[in-house]
Image: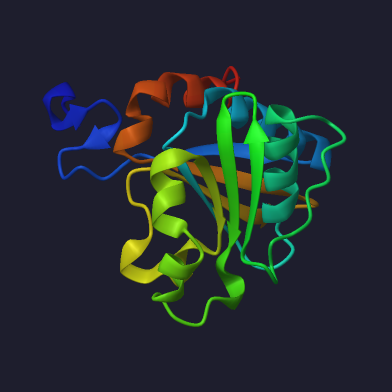
Length: 173
């Protein structure tokens, strides 16, 4: 591919290029969460994808604690759909849309306001349908051996941080 066919991490058709990070242990997942939290800004959406048990809530818990306190209680928002926190860099909104029955409920739970005025962590983002944030950071967690791997897909809002995301992978052998 020619350099002219790329624009800051995107193919000519504007398809973002994924960044894959191995997460052999829960400590690695916690470390990734902490690094992502350091990069996040109010107005960012992190879409946490993966099947049940892949570590979405674990990643969210460590992300939130790195911006609040290490002892912050971080219950899963599965039943409430939303938990909010005040972080050092601004408000945090943790959505778990697994139980969302219809996209119309997004308005009722303050989804749109949160996208503009807080850092949003969204588990099961596909349940938002057409309102799923497209310009944020998709974090896909998948099984890999005895551990996991994270595939980061930065949307347009994260392009200025793409190099920092690539550095999370570390040096290649």
